Structure formats: C-alpha cells, structure tokens
Length: 222
Image 1 (cartoon, rainbow, N blue to C red):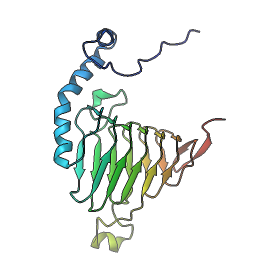
Image 2 (cartoon, rainbow, N blue to C red):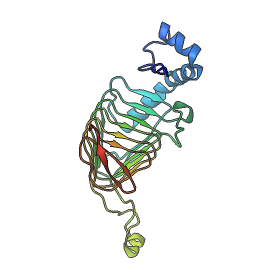
Image 3 (cartoon, rainbow, N blue to C red):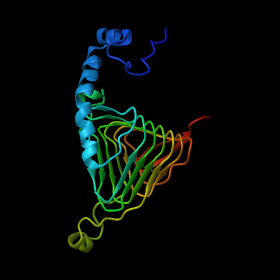
Image 4 (tube, one colour):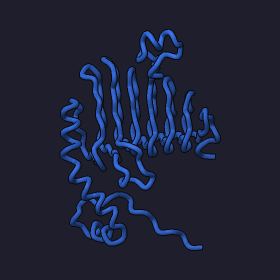
C-alpha cells in the first residue's frame, strides 16, 4: 500500500509564486482562503490597535477575531500568531470567531511565539500564560474562572464573582478540538490533550491525556 503524499508545509509566502499557482489548481478553496486572509488583515490590525495590544511579526488571520481587553489588563502575544475565525478557514468548522478576553483590571494573558487557535475562546480574569509553539484545536475554551459563584446566595448577590486560579500551558503543548481547560491547571511541555477533554487537574510534561476529567493515558514517547 503506497504512502499518501505529504501535505504542503505551509501556505505559500507569495500569492504570485509557483507554489500559489499549484495550490490554486489543486485546492481552490485554499486559494480563496488566502485571498480572504489578505482582505481581513487590515481589519484585524485595527481591532488589536483599538484594544491596545502590541502587533507581532508574522501574524496571520483567517477572519477577524474578537478582542475584549480591559484597559487596565495585560495582553501580550508573541510572533507567528495564527487565528482561524471563520467556518471556511478550517475543515473542522469553527463555531465562532476566536475570542481573546481579559475581563478585569490586573488580568494577564501572555502568549508566546507560534501560537495557533481555531474558533476557540481564551477568557482571563486572573492569569493565563501560554508558552511557545502551542496549538489549540477547533472550538476549545481555556479559562481561569468559574464565572459564577457555586453557592446560591453568593451567586445571587455577586453573580460575576466566581473563583479564579491561574492557568499555565507550557511550550509545545497541543490541545485537541472541543476541549475545555479549567482554572488552576498546568499542562506540561509537549503534552497532548485528546479531543473533547475536560482538563481539571495538572497534566505533566510529555504525556498524552484525555477524558472527562482528563487523565494521563500514556507517555508521549514510549
């Protein structure tokens, strides 16, 4: 049985290159996607500028993300960012644009180089730190807050005063589609979280974890 041909490593650097011409012939939807990316780029740049988020090198946007930044919060993102926010931008079908939200004064969202996300949400009330080369599958939510108190009396009196705890996702981690990463967890370096997982506790480095709640399945390298 023959091996399938390799995927292209990345979209071509220029729409006028031979690689772009081949892409347009073989996968016309990708050519249309790159054209839409060029059209949405100035709008995305304006969105980040209005939010007061420093612009990085090599950022790519397929559709325009939603950025909700509290003026007295911190949102820092490294070079090589790639966000996919429209249904046609990924075969897994984003449910909504990527949402980056810091909701309180003093909240901190710090993301390293080479971050990629499709149609997901990162919501911060205290602190979320994401390392370099972290990829997040379609329609995943990462949050450091319960949003609402668990106790009924507290929920009625202070509906937005849910418990918070920092989240850390270390370098090279990969989170599968439609996962949920909850407050107070650390996902270790290079670890892989299976699709549809609910991460409620720390995941060590270099493992595959999955389930609800997510648990270690095996080491990444046997």
